[in-house]
Every structure is written in structure tokens, then in C-alpha cells.
Length: 481
Ligand code: FAD
Image 1 (cartoon, rainbow, N blue to C red):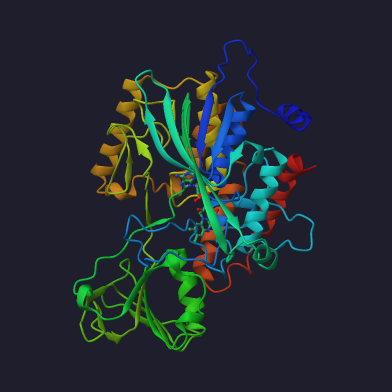
Image 2: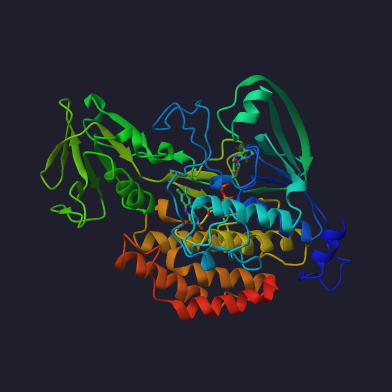
């Protein structure tokens, strides 16, 4: 289309298009990773089909009040609700840092937009929709289509089996409701069985709960749940709730709950055993060391010796990688939450470049990292960028794993990139022949992290890195004017 035509002008297109191969590529998922993967693949000249189980783009950022029937998410056959967002969620990163490199997350005009630097979740969804519209991505997406099997064939191609479920709803209900809570009167399912040259997996990794093990929990009479199924504090009014965890969800949810619950106790494994502190400014929020055991009288004993009689334990203990549709005949596995072997967290050496994963690293800024990974995948598939040999990639992976092991880092931290994400992004950019990370991005990320530690209650509304914000906006002009 004309729109696509104008877009290609901005692209880092190969000088000679003769040696460039165009492939038929399946992308699994239309979240932040899948959308940018589709854009990069399309820009590079591939034909792209994006499979999306949900009925709109945005993945995690599509908030729903619905939760799963199994509150701990242990039953593999349970109906899946993808998003883990809670109603009050605002981003934990400043928008300048969070956005894609060439489509900055700036405030856009419109009554319903949230101009705050750390906006509410709906603004992120609207940004992703703007992105998809700008680059014509939505036309590539097959909605309500779940990938149920991806398997390699003997000729090296990929068989992708998917299932489209259409729901027919009561039209009157539809008019009166926004999206959810509609009466489904019938469902129809159509199955697809297709062949692709390559598959790019972008199915997200914040849906399958990871649960803490607590001695004595089986005879403890209270309710347990995972933060995946937390939406609003109201159901916890006047209750005594114990939260396990210390990452962003736990930090937000304990404060959400403290506004209505009788008591909130947060157990963390990353603090000293004697830890027992009351949160300043609250009279019902305490921080403890980890839980030691749970008892059949409803008591929960902490390592600091305190005993709390609680009604609910909420596990804010993170998520597991999960690829129920992927059959690589054992070449790619998840072992103690290490997805491997993966060269640079993207390519399994034996299947590269025809199978790849976008957005696997964590403790990172996901949108720009996924953007650079996607450029790499698109460029390698077209033949513009060359990967090392299979043997070299395998050696690189093995030496990476040995380094982790030698430093005593458990397998489950393999994809926790954290501090080295900017170096990683610069490496990706160098491979792709595009510009490295902008000067302001890392210092702004560092300042935001320090601000969060300094002002855990107010970091989203008070900050000091005004000069970096100016620098970022000077840079954004390149992409927004
Ligand atoms: P997702 O957004 O999870 O998208 C995956 C998509 O794949 C979904 O649409 C899903 O329906 C689809 N899918 C899955 N399986 C299939 C299948 N078999 N067939 C078809 N489709 C399938 N990041 C930030 O940058 N800033 C923040 O402030 C921030 N806060 C967060 C708060 C919470 C509570 C959580 C859980 C995450 C947060 N993140 C944040 C990280 C967030 O996950 C990323 O920003 C981003 O959404 C990841 O995108 P993704 O495309 O990798 O995965």
C-alpha cells in the first residue's frame, strides 16, 4: 500500500536487494514483541502472518477484570487469561525510556490520553495501538487464532497448526458492555494447518505463575492465589493478607491492599532473617523475612519468629517460560527457567535462523530490546546479516553458561540481563548496522531506578533527571516531526 511505500523510505534497506531472500514467516503473539517483530520482518521484505489468541493487539497491556478459575494457576488445563495487569497499574519505567527507539512514547493528543511520565496501563495499550496503526501491522494479524502446534519438518520448514475460535455474542449485551462480560451464545472453531519458512516466537512470559513452596501449606486453611489473578483490592477488605515477593508487583499490590485490608504482611527472601519493619506512613503494612511454615490453625510463621493469623497468601513470585505449542524434538527446552540453548537469547543454534525468540530477557526495558532483536532476526533471515556458524554459536552459548555457573548464578537467572542490557542492545545494533543506544537512555534508566529506591511511594510523580528528559525529547524530534 501507499502507506507501506512511504515507510520503506526510512528503512535501513540493503544496498543490493539481489541477494536478499524473502521468507514466509509466522509470528506467534501480537504483544509489544510480536508487533515490532512483524514490522521489522515486513520492512525487510518478508511476508508475515501474526497469530494472536486474543481479540486485540497489546498482549500484557490488554487489561481484563477476568481472572482464571484456578487462582494459583497450577492446573495446566485451566482456561488461560493472558494479562497479569491489575487495575491501578502505572508503568514502573519513565515513558521516554520505555518506548520503541523510532516510535517514541511521547504524549499524544486526545481527551482519553494519559500525559503522565509514568502513565496508567491503558495509555501503554493506546501507544501500542498507535504503533500498529502507524506501521500497518494490524493487517498482518489473525485475531482469536491460537497457535496450538509448531513443529519442524524434515525439509527444514515449519508446520504451524492453529485454531480460530469465533464467539457469537448477544448483540444487545454487546451494546451495553465494553468488551468483557458479554453473553456468548455460540462458538465456532476452525483449524488451520500451514507451512512456513520461519517462526518467530513472541508469546510473552508473564502468564504462567511460579509459586513459592511453603512447608505445611497443604493443611493451612486459608486461600492462596498468585498475583496473576489480582485485579482490585476490594475483595480483600478487612482481611489479613500475606504477600510473598519483593519485585514491582509486590511493591504495588501491598500498597493497593493496605488501603482496604485489615493488615498486610510482605514476606521477602531477599532480606535478613530478623527483618521485621513497619512501613512508614501506614499503620497496617509490615515487611518480614521469608515464611518459615504455615500451620493448620491458620497461623503463618515467619523466619523472624513472628506468627500472623492470615486469611490469604498471595504469591507475587514471578512467572515461568512456557511454550506449550512448541515441538522441537527436544532441541529447545526449558530447564529451571532457562530456555536453551539460545544464542544471545534469540536463536537456538541448530535451528537458526528459522526459529527465533523475541523478548526473552528480563530485568530489562522490553520494547526497545525487542525492537533490536527483531531487526536482527529480520536481517539474518533475509541474508543481509550473517550469523556465526552453528558450531561457533554453540560454543558461545556453552561458554556463556559456564561463566554463569562459575559465578554461582543459577540457571533460572540465565535471561536476567539487568545491568548489561545496554551493552547487549549496542551489540544487537552493531550487528544490524543501526545506531546504538542513545546517550540519555542508560543514565535515565539508572536515575529512574535510584529514584524508585529513594522514593518508593512517589517515584512516579517526583524526579530530578529533568536535563535527561530534555535530551530525550530533543532526540525524539527526529522521529516525531
Ligand atoms: P505479551 O505482551 O505477553 O504478548 C504476548 C502475546 O502472545 C499475547 O497477546 C498473547 O495473547 C499471545 N499468545 C500467547 N500464546 C499464544 C498462542 N499460542 N497463540 C497465539 N497467540 C498467543 N514493561 C515495561 O516496559 N514497563 C512497565 O511498566 C511494565 N510493567 C509490567 C507490569 C506487569 C504486571 C507485567 C506482567 C509486565 C510488565 N511489563 C512492563 C513487561 C511487559 O510484559 C512488556 O512490556 C511487554 O508487554 C512484553 O511483550 P511481549 O510481546 O513479549 O509479551
